[in-house]
Length: 229
Image (cartoon, rainbow, N blue to C red; front, side, top):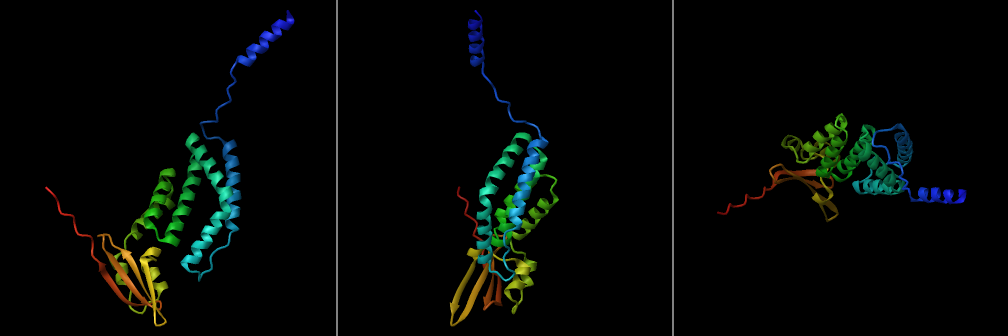
């Protein structure tokens, strides 16, 4: 009788579904503490990576950035997945701040090394959405919006005889595919092309790294399409 009763109880226990506790839907210090520790380690790894020398070309800087990212990737990608999952589940503003900071770092790389201002602007805006009180992200949104198109005032300050570094300080460096270069008779001739807000483009011409000509209206804006009835 006792044996039969034990079998009945055991059978009932086995038949009863066991539900695992769902992860917390509210911000909690236990999970955040672990994520913070992981993030500190990533910061340590990031700071240990070499920096490009001051005289490095854009190609050299970009190659070094990509190499550094590749070293961090095995640790960085799983961490970001964890932070995103935690943020989506708990809406912890601390996680939003980390995600926003990483968007800013990525946006800065697009600004500094690639001159892809539209992509940088997209990332900065995403940072503001993640962390609405982030003044740094908002400032960068304004900066990227101002760099998408060349300013007539800044362009007018580019003078014949200026070197590339001085020009870069005034109007920035164009995207790599908007820099054309040719070598003739031992001299390097290049042109930097800048988009204008009206859809046209301006150009700055260099002879061995020194400005010899500028053209605000190097390319006309596209003609408006004719309306069809």
